[in-house]
Length: 378
Image: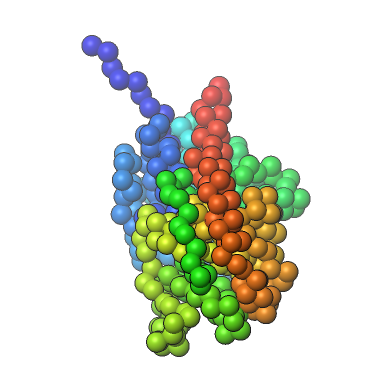
């Protein structure tokens, strides 16, 4: 009797609710078809994994001993974090062939698990500058993250990140050569919808003022008849309810409940132009290349954005939209008012072409190549 081949084992660690972490879900869906995948994270087990270690909700992954942090006893700070103590008591050393560590927080844990073939780090942010708009964070927390990157991430066997700007900064400051896996969803089999007389703008994402107020202020100045629909995730701050009240009865701005991740692209397909103006209040905001940008392309929409360099480069490369000259509401309003149905139809057609490239099917090879390279090592 011939035994079935033993699949290599891959452990994926992320301190996030896996069921709504689009990037980590793409890792899991990609790798579970080839390997025996175990996951570590918050929330229920993802479909198709062989094992899931669920971190209790009451254990907050970023809780640290402030006295140790202020004393710059960084290794003790990390080792005494409640999430580290809980996981180290439950994750066996040397069990897996490869560990994928999502974000810098998980890299020391991953290396300490001593996988047989190595550790791949996937960095979703530029961690040392993640909350640099806060002075206390810059003074107290940023040095800790620089230590994490310098001491531990440099020991990972391979690294990927989400945008060219982040990759360049990891190389400049730490000498880390990070591959690029952009946050693109799977290719959607859709076609552009016809453009009517009034341009239909749309945005979907977290309901936070830093990401919305420029666009909302601009809509007060738009004279072309364009409308804006927002599908917002309520962050519990009271902001989204305030928007519902603010735009109750408005024909120009409409607030909707969020859509499940796997329904976002088909929902967006009914619109004309995806919009996103993200003021560069931090390094990570400046170099953002978010899920929603690629959702717009897969939905076959045109795009209007602010001059965020990594997004702007893709807009210009694929001719899928308009880059406003600055991040002001006046510039955004002018960009919207300049749109014509004919130009929007051209943008949507360009997105239809770009969708074949700006999709997970093309992007995730950065992960499969990394895992295969580790498994191929002696």
